Length: 79
Image 1 (cartoon, one colour):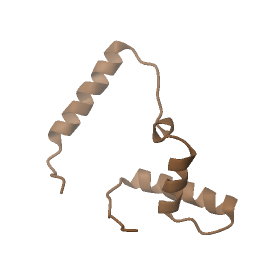
Image 2: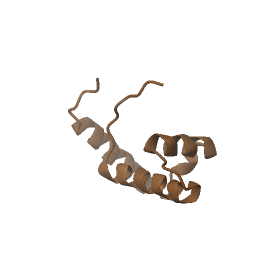
Image 3: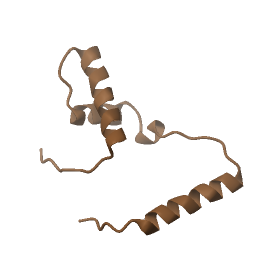
């Protein structure tokens, strides 16, 4: 298996650590973050992990405008 470094935000890293910790408690063995992700991926589609909410068209348009503004202000280039 090859490994790849990835960048994730601090809140996502903390969330993954909590998930891995819960799995360790349940399984009574050490669970790496990679193992936790694998188990999450196999348990249900990743799309089910995403939240959703009801919003008006105006709220949706505001959200999309903010996302677009954020992407336009991002200067980092991916490798």
